[in-house]
Length: 170
Image 1 (tube, rainbow, N blue to C red):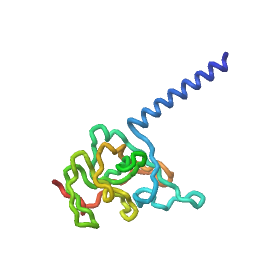
Image 2 (cartoon, rainbow, N blue to C red):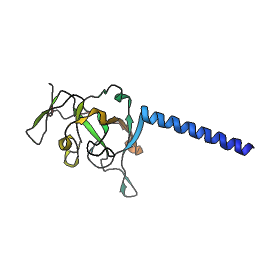
Image 3 (cartoon, helix red, strand yellow):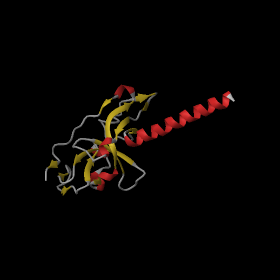
Image 4 (cartoon, rainbow, N blue to C red):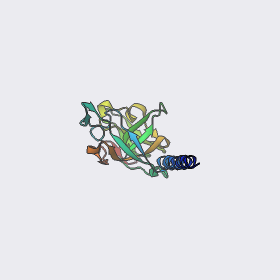
């Protein structure tokens, strides 16, 4: 009977920790992998290797910002792709609702609609972002990237910055 009791106790604790872990990762903070070079050099700069292979960055994603959609210029955010809800992208916010945006490579000027934001990758030559699919709804944003959590030699806060030549207030 002692083995059965110990097994039940272990299973109960394991299940409880799992439920708490899912709650915390859903409401407060999570970890997300960074794929590709669209946010280089901020994320995945291509300088970290393990046995000759490049290592992707993993980032902490804070989700409290979703309560009232509290975002600001330069925030790096994780969001669902507007064209494929199964894909997640990580980009930097460069314009917020009501602002005018002028892209660097065209003469177009666009006003960001209410409830939307404009996102761009730091490496514009390899970034699929708002220049491709337009402003994204704030409802697709899943959280704000605050820190690089992996690899160990890159652990640290993610810098907030924004291109100065694209923003104009309404």
